[in-house]
Amino acid sequence: MQFGIMSVSDVTRDPTTGQTPSEAERIRDFVTIAKKAEEVGLDVVAVGEHHNPPFFSSSPTTLLAAIAAQTERLILTTSTTLITTNDPVRIAEEYAMLQHLSNGRMDLMLGRGNTAPVYPWFGHDIHTGLHLALENYNLLHRLWREDVVDWEGRFRTALHGFTSTPRPLDDVPPFVWHGSIRTPEIAEQAAYYGNGFFANHIFWPPSHTKRMVNFYRERYEHHGHGPAKTAIVGLGGQFFVGRTSQGAKDAFRPYFDAAPVYGGGPSLEQFSESTPLAVGSVQEVIDKILGYHEYIGNYQRQLFLVDHAGIPVGTVLDQLELFGAEVLPVLRREFASRRDPEVPAGPPTHADLVRAKYGDGEPRQPRPAANRGDNVTGGSPYIDLIDAQN
Image 1 (spheres, helix red, strand yellow):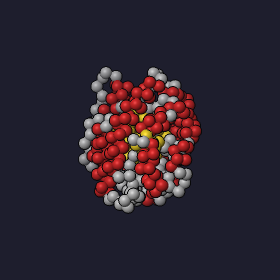
Image 2 (cartoon, one colour):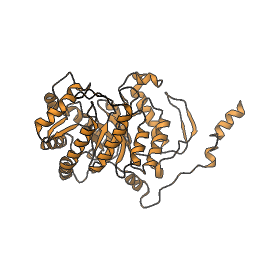
Image 3 (cartoon, helix red, strand yellow):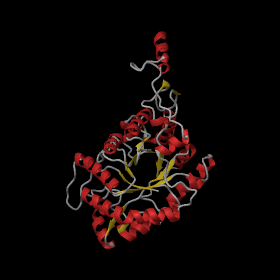
Image 4 (cartoon, one colour):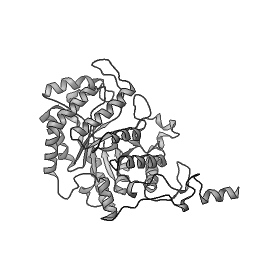
């Protein structure tokens, strides 16, 4: 099972000091946090995509490429790539480039996004968000698997004889997760393609997450990808760990109370009781996270939100140090002991996907071909035909 961290990339005032970091500080600090995650033994680092204040991560591939250059083992991913407002052609190209630069140490999570003003900024209507998500992924799926694509849809201009570049590393597309909080159509799309399903799992009661995951697993089996229990599931979460229960709560409470997503509602204790939020001593955090298995069963990836709501970078690094030293080893051992041997221990890596496609053979390495058009000007026989007609 993979364990990692995720960030929504907010730039938020620290309620205990009144200080707000700059965007530059938050960007540099997140690279530092990612490197610390690798140092303490975590497997994955994920960052979201936002195009509005107070968030800094408008270009996840750029940030993840920088982290790839400074790490050796971490799997790089997104805690949301906006499949709605991004052109699927650009997603195909940018994440294939990241795949090459990271030597396959990446995957990505697609999501609709829930910030209404972003849609018109990119020429779309939020009311078409679900339809955009479904159609755009259908195109992205083909762009990574077909050298030449002819396509027509509702939301973008048609493609004729189009080749996205670079082609995926070893001609094997990155593994894709579909992230959703409450939309069964997204779980259905993940199941249809045999992709992973990631449940946000932070703000909702366990019963809701269980229903969504069970629906995805049932549909995964229905579409012929294997038994429901072998479907690839990921969960979000959040922890704040201390040497004592009260110490952890006292340290985290100011950030909880001031956070836009938490503050003004139930108390920290009430929220922790009704959701997966894990705040407390080392043993309390271990027990809370192991409890996820009781209602989800075996799953493959667990990501934790660690750096939002103004928590300073020094505190985040201390959290990762304690988590890596005293929580992570126990979680690895306990989750492994509970795993059904027929269930995948983790999501497929790039090496797994290459092996599944080629066995012991050498992977195909796509190269520009004359029949795909003029590689200097981008021209093609189709364009030449249009020019001749005009």
